[in-house]
Length: 446
Image (cartoon, rainbow, N blue to C red; front, top):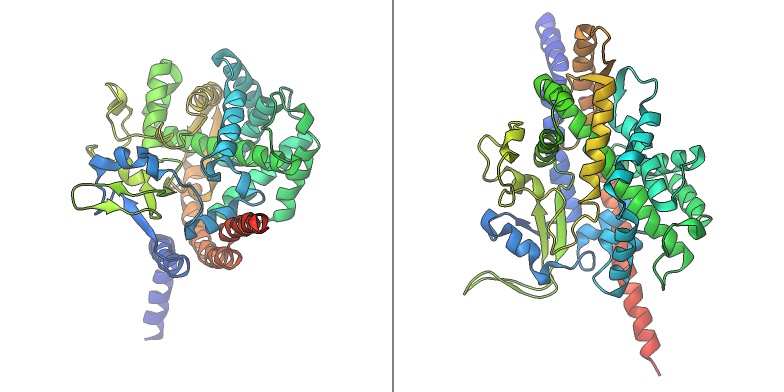
């Protein structure tokens, strides 16, 4: 009896990587819903189908961003400091327009310059790499230097690169609930930017205090840009590592083919999970249905990107060989509702960076690949032309990755639950708008 019980216990322990993470994720979802509330209308969903996704997303009344949603308290918590100046979280109005214009000016670089800048940054980031790496960790210094030079028009010093990378890694780790926020680390970058405002290569928006200008740069360029480009490139390289034939074709094929690989990667692994918007007026859906003002719409990118495709989980760049305008594919959002301002620049930079990686390395991985990018994208890099002896390394990676899933799931359960609770306790977004309203009311008193 004892031997049988011991055998069962050992079997359950050995099987942990295959059954525990999924159950932990389900438990996290239930706990988050319990703590954070269930306020959103899913799109697509029962009320708004896939066929009306773009229509509702593009509606002028679907433009509220933060005010009035409990979800905003959570995102403001993760993006602190300065979430009130983060371009994606500013409400529509003169301030948003001024900030958006500045962002567009900073991103409006000629294609040749963007490619040359990416090649220089990639050359520094890729020097000396070989063997097992974490792709997101490799990519972050590259895009930290890229973003710095976009903003300041000069090469990024080591001090700044380390500050930017530390800040971005801290933000994305807290967003994924794999680590708590380290506000001192983030504030060190804020202080650095405050001392560099006069060197920004375009005029910063009028009407902002120096601290608000620093928060704007930190949020738009050194949080979002660095994190999203690093995640996107890690996904792209993981896809190529898992599909050797596609990797070889990308290495030797033309830009059009590589662009389709990027498109398919962003379809399978969209950088946005849920984009929430708050309606500023009613949105009619028909004779007898209206989405009322103040509703929180949760636009589900992964669900939209799966709809209308045969075998949607299969990697197939040929889906984009024909006209793609009508495909359910919006990796950079929709033009009518806060599209990603880097929609033109990002694919150019990603293609160039991918070329630099493929020119130097053959990529292999046996790690799990999901949209959340488990464990920062484990991958083996073998310099092109050298013998590939990867079988044992891939077997070890597979085992290590499965066991890391167990530990990561438990960490996310504990830290994620705490951070959702703490964000609701602090109510950063709610208090910001409450204080604004009180200040306005006070000024009106004679």
